[in-house]
Image (cartoon, rainbow, N blue to C red; front, top):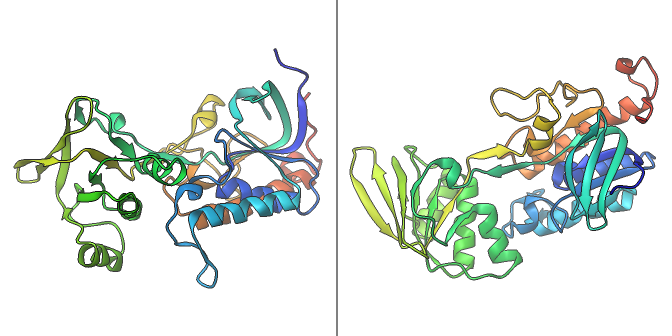
Length: 330
């Protein structure tokens, strides 16, 4: 059973960089009721389990967890309410959501909703890799959470599938866990990171990079024992390993947008937005990885600030609402 609906001014779904940046900008000017929901137990999104550097600015470089704490602190100090462990289940109206959290079911109504649900890496099953279903199969996010958040042991010999920036971050996590990196495998003809990063990994860490190569099968029962790969010329080779990490190939976490009947962009399958990040539903906006899967945290943060400006203009009386502040739905 649910109680009576609760009203806020702005409801933000997702406490990653985009959602927290939007909350900090919206709460600061005096929008009294800004609430951020996240189904994870900790706010901060992906950066909270990225212990490598590369976040912040050149003059103020940060690790991922430090960057997440910075964004969360700014949102809370501005007056936003950040609630974790709360899942937005479905729409209860044009600008209302049914949620499930520690205190049960609840309906929250708002004058504006921001979808900042981010993106996720496509798992093994969605990549149509055949074989058994052994333990030892991760995405980058699962690997980083296991190693950095939960201090879990992974295997001793690891194959990383992909050669993007995120793939090299996964390789760093493998080394931090004390495991051996057997190879990085990409079906492309070269790595997709910067030349400097690729050369540093090859020369300093002796990372074997197999290009024009596809993982076709996972081997082993109970625990992974190896992967079968196929080179472009048709040759197949078995790599002995007890862990494989599928990296990159991001897809938007667009379930709420889809269930709400919002128009989706044909190229990304995230919500379609205009220049102000307004979706096809009046009063509903989107920002961050749900629009551009795999984008950098700094880009998502900037989009969060951008969407805050558009939301504030709507609440103050944009032309699309004939100069009137939209009333909360009844």
